[in-house]
Length: 190
Image (tube, one colour):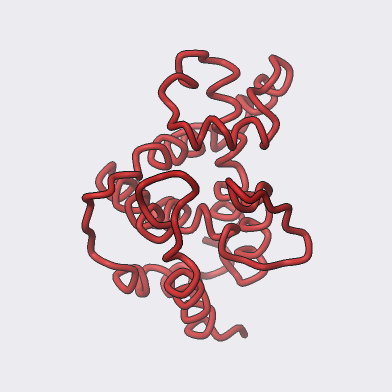
């Protein structure tokens, strides 16, 4: 039996201690971006698992692991995969980890299937897109579109792009503690 309190403490400490830095060319910190993304999900009526995926989608930027691929301007290029794996190892659900791991591919999908979407991206997001493989090819997009959780992956991507308001104030990271505990204490059948 894992100690879910310790996992939640670890996640909150990681976000609080490592999330204060600038969010790569945006006018918000990494923590502010993550919190804004979660609030967007809550306001859209997302279930708790999806709200937590929104909150934790960039956690890979906060980790210092051997498999990280860093770029001076945009942080951890493979933060999506690293974050998803790290969360799964700590007992977060496969769905949550898969959504975290796919938020970059969702951007690649949207820019590959809708060229106007790229024009709406922030400058920093366009820069990271190139480092993350650029827009998907038609074959890649067809595969991505067949995902069972496509709608949720695209919703998460939308909230990710919206969560960059420098004047935003929110409820704070601790408000997600109980939600994380419920998630980690779920039964395996959930």
